[in-house]
Image (cartoon, rainbow, N blue to C red; front, side):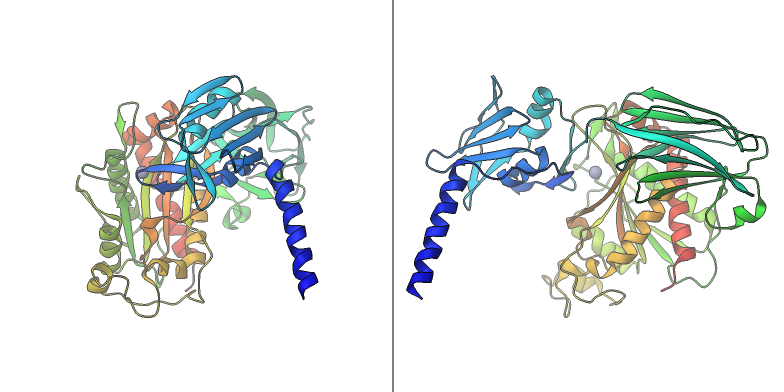
Amino acid sequence: MKRVLVSTILVTLVFAILCACVTHSASASEARKAKKIGDRYYLSMNDAALLLGATKYWKAETRKAVLNVEGTQIRLTVHSPVVAVGEKTYVLPSPVLFSRGVPFIPVELFTETVPAVLGKRVTWNRDTQYLSVMREGTVPASVSVEVTEQATYVTVESPERIEYSPVRVSEEGFTLLLERASFLTKPALPENAMVKGLSVGRVSGGAELRLALAPGVSGYSLERKPSPPRIVLGFTSSEEMLRSSQFLPFEAEMPRVASGRNYRVVVIDAGHGGADEGLRAGGSVEKHVNLELARALKDALAAAGGLEVVLSRNDDSQMSVDDRAVRANTAGGDIFVSLHCDGYSGSQARGYSVEVLEQGGARGLAGERRPLSGDAAGGSSGNVGLVPWNEVARGHASESAALARYISRGLGRVEGLRDAGFRRAPLALFHGLDMPCVLVNCGFLTNPGDEALLRETSSQRRIAGAIARGIVEFVNDSRR
Ligand SMILES: [Zn+2]
């Protein structure tokens, strides 16, 4: 017993000595969550190393930390706002903190200093508290064309996943933006292909695949397939293929809600309001944009019939996240969609994203419906039966994820709007919502292209129409 204990201490000592000098290197990760301490946001040393793909060094005696990012050193000292990045010195708006044995670094290091010095693109979403690094470098891609009896398929294949967004979707032509992609060759087109012209061109951030379509093409499909990573575009002129759910008609009209569905009340939540303005960029104020989008979404859903729509706010009033949950639950909401805009310190980041509550902690609640009274939702400090208040929404995790996919697919058809991804986040907004719930970031107000789309009534209608279509398709395809 004693010998075992001694050897354990020895092993621990050796390990501790090793760790004091150099800790493990980490691979780059897409997103890490910041922590709110006081009224500021911080990233732990561990998360910082993961986010930047850095090797970290920590000297406990002097409380100095170093992050080595591809040969450039970021040197930090606990309780000091001064940070050295390579040869330069910067002063952060608040000092590095030290909590439970871990340094916490102000997020401004990642949003302002790191992009300026290391050229990495970092996005910061204050609503979700997530920092993410855009991936760099190009990915070689190849394109091939295959003709079947009823359709023509254009496949983009690459050794790793490529993000894409349709730039143009019309009967005459289809343009797909492929982030980071770089094409070496271009295929010959089979004579009977429904694609009559194919070109690839370099654009900022990647490549564009531009297709000219044959007369009579009436529908398309766009799918991602794994191993090897592929994006498959299909074109058809066959009515039969169009009736299959795989193909979408060009300029599809709003579908009607099928009768006998179990989702009836849709709660649309315009983010922010009152003194809480959200983002401000390019002359737009997020709280106003969110409300205009919410009203447009209400109109678009009315066109589908069969759904009752409730707005959590229909004016500039300020609402807490709890107010919003109570309003949604007492309205008997079956679906909750919160509308927001994204923002970033640079103007490059763009596109829409859909967020759902992060999973984990769910305790066999799936599918369970528990009516909540307004009183229980409002005042009684989390005492809502057997389930902790903040875990109510987790019971709807799989429905929420499905709803997010449908809305994302709907938004994917909006010309000029890029798919910026799908995220799981521990959003306080969702805590206590007893229904499937998603948050849609409809675009980046800080990107001039997106901001124009978000500001103008006609494109607001297109965005709202796309979200409505996603909701209606989700309702029509769901059985619960
Ligand atoms: Zn917002």
